[in-house]
Amino acid sequence: MSVSGDSLWITMREKGYSRREFMQFCSFAAATIGLGVQGKAEVAKAFEQKQRPPVVWLHFQECTCCSESFIRGSHPIVADILLDSISLDYTETLMAASGHQAEKSLADTIKKYAGKYILLVEGSVPTGADGVYCVIGGRSAAQILEEAAKDAAAIVAWGNCASYGCVQAAKPNPTGATPIQELVGKPVIQVPGCPPIADVMVGVITHILLFGRPPELDSRGRPKEFYSRRVHDTCYRRPYYDAGLFVESFDDDHARKGYCLYEMGCRGPVTYNACAVTRWNDHTSYPIQSGHPCIGCSEKGFWDDGPFYRHLPSFPGFPIEATADTIGAALGVGVAIGVGAHAITTNIRKRPVIQETQAESVSEPTDKKKVD
Amino acid sequence: MTPTSVSYRRIYVWELPVRAFHWINAAAITVLGLTGFIIGHPFSVAYTQEASFQYWFGTVRFIHFLAGYIFLINMLMRIYWGFVGNAYSNWKEFIPTSRSWIGDIKEVLKVDILQTSVHGPVHVGHNRLAGLIYFGTFWMFLFQALTGFALYAPMSRLFVGKLATWIVPILGGDQNVRHLHHTMLWFYVAFAIVHVYLVFYHDYVEGRGTTSSMVGGWKFEREDYLDKH
Image 1 (cartoon, rainbow over the protein chains, first blue to last red):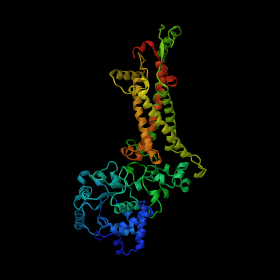
Image 2 (cartoon, one colour):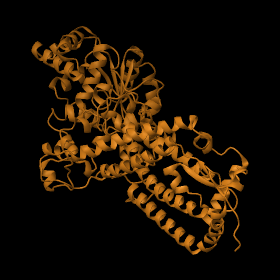
Image 3 (cartoon, one colour):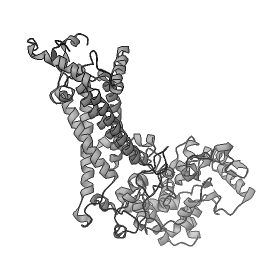
Image 4 (cartoon, each protein chain N blue to C red):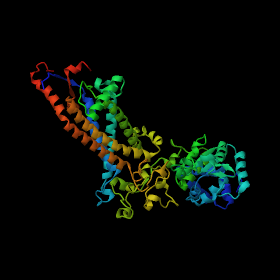
């Protein structure tokens, strides 16, 4: 692994990339973070001159799908250079070192680059049973995170695990999986998704490298440039939604025609992500384009809001098939029956009421002063 | 039975803005409920045409949003009127403040549930139980307006929706907001059934013109009771 301190361009040149390839990469990076044509020069300048900040990439309770996504970034240089050259001083998945050497590398980086390094965290931190569910090198995830977060220049939560807890935090959350935002007393850049889109991850890192500060975040800590729009509003199938053309079962004629998957439980209308814009796998496709409803993997609690293929989730505390509508309809029928029964008993008991009112009514015509 | 001489006096209870609020609200809720149910369960219509030639689901949503604005503005008007209107429309009518108030509520509960006869005066405006229920209903209105506009905010350029988005993180994301917003539809269904029934019931057992009062504004009260209010 190369030593921190060189610029990205120097590292790339050493690796045999041409100037043209470097510039291509710069325009890609500029476009991803929404800088446009002018931004290309800015990006190139930053990658030429700025020292690459050291990066610590921690893995806790997760499936490594964030890393897998990241190394499949659209631009070939991303995998080869960015991951390598952002000076990954510690990452369990990809580093060569192991055992005590690796742990020493982490400790050295934290010490040497205090206040300068970027901390990328993949996975949630189990806090149950004193953190025994995730122990690396004899220390619990919570301890490692605390040490690493203390002097970090910026902290990025990769994926839904680090951002919201994800599947491990599904009820009843046996390991006490906790999002890192709740454990570090600092602002965290949330990059949710299971996994997040590779280009989004590259975009976030590029932004930090380029401007030396986190991208603009929304109220929930997510970069606005990628998470300010719903999948629904950017979806190419949206016109079918407005036209009321829906897929009603998989493999029906409507599915073949590519109609809207709203009735199949698509979470696009409640999911904020850039899938429909950047797409996946070198801008090839995204779930809805492949005929599968969005499951809302970048949203908090998506794992407990099942079933995925139904528009309404199950109602908590009720049998698994019960939705708000079954409960509501039962309530409505119950109320109607109650009201009906009440009306019947009222009618059975109506004689005294009628007598009383008649008694009053009789006197009315004779009552002269009752003129308003 | 010997005829007893009872004379009634009419009282102007519901001023025009209150009646207008009531019926606009009823119409808005009906439209919102129906369109909301369709949005939750789009049914199959018109599959013969291409998307370019139809927009029915968009239209249903548009009607829902329009009715939502009417519902909200109407509600704000009623809150305003709760400070400037007559005594029966005042906001204090909705919150129990005295011990006798609790006694009144118990009395209404007896009439409603045990079906005892009405004896003695019942509060001329909303009966005390109804007032309290409407106070709770107001919060339900507010909740539905907040969740509705929070869901509407991403597709709106107007500031109104953005005023409600703070509720989204509190409720745990758009999916939960949508779920609760949908669930609340059934509160309105149950409320409407009970409300309409109880109006008819009270009109019948009290004989004071409760039903028509929301059209003309007048209620009728026995003169010998008027002093007791």
